Image (cartoon, rainbow, N blue to C red):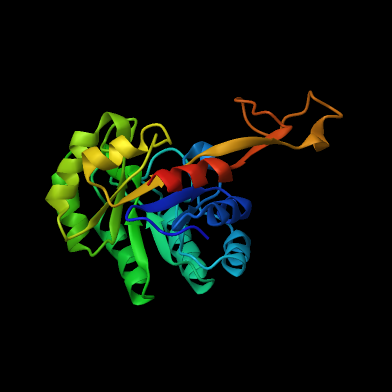
Length: 251
């Protein structure tokens, strides 16, 4: 395992294999999801259980019942609560979530309930990039800090962290010691040093994958299992261990 640097490296993972690859590359922490194509949804219990057996570093688990926004129905929210309880029981080191009202403000009551669940279990809580669409990020930081959320994952309310280093630095300064700011989105080996220097961030969140081949579907190339946006059925993504290792080295 590589020696830790002063800048903590969190890797966004979409499978157990992703977690293992990130672990072997020297990552300090991971966020475990399913369906990264849609920004990350709740992972399976099995994925977490196997990942916990194979590693000894923190695994944060996404709590997100569906794609397409962050204002959930009552049944979707109850599903979030049940998933959170089960994943904590299976060793999740923290919960990653984001609840918004129809007008895009933070849903205080739902956020507070998930935050308290994590606190009661002695685990961390993360408000994810739903934060990047709130109308007033200072007001949002104040609320999340008041609710004892551990940290906020953010791109600085821009498509990429690289485009918002000044805003993220302002967020870090504004948050102070009240809540952690975790920059994530578009961070690569080419820009990571500049981003850390310009923001003063002490932790970053990255997702760097490579494409692998699965030949099992090639007997009938006319068959697809998804929706109207047809993905390739003979390939899948996995964390690029070499790229993550290189990024960790430059930190």
